[in-house]
Image 1 (cartoon, rainbow, N blue to C red):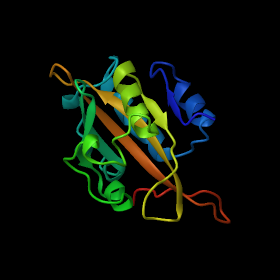
Image 2: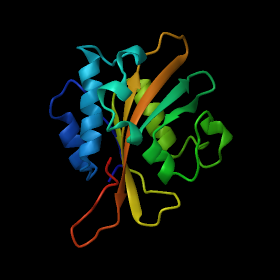
Image 3: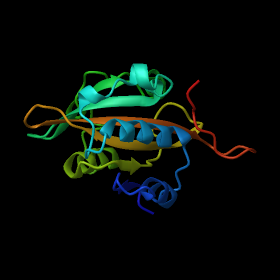
Image 4: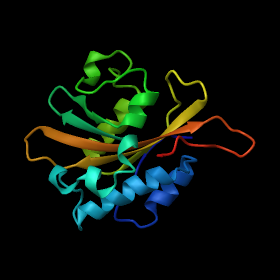
Length: 179
């Protein structure tokens, strides 16, 4: 099974089909996509100035990240890392470039490939990698990567919503949902 899928945001069933193909179930991912989609207003993607998640969707912000994309000498900078994401990562990466950390500075990694795909195709991308971090009760992460337009030649942005999925319990899988 593939763990990365891009999809056409204009196809009303594409998100559901793509999530099913990756065995993703997070309502948080659906809500993040719907927020981004509502900001597009008929365009391929919203501009950075079209989104204001702190006002529009404050309950999603803890599970959100923003990345700068530098296309020349491709690299990604952690611009904003929501509090829940930061809590479940190894450390706070805010302000750092992928190229500064061996864990993320790998063009063959699923995260690097997904971010590159979303930026190159200017389409949403779903990613479901194994969780690698300090919390042993998580098994994988569900992500939706959403491109944003910026008015700066050679640059882009990605808005990402991330849900951490715990090991199965008697009641099934449980994500680390916003509080």
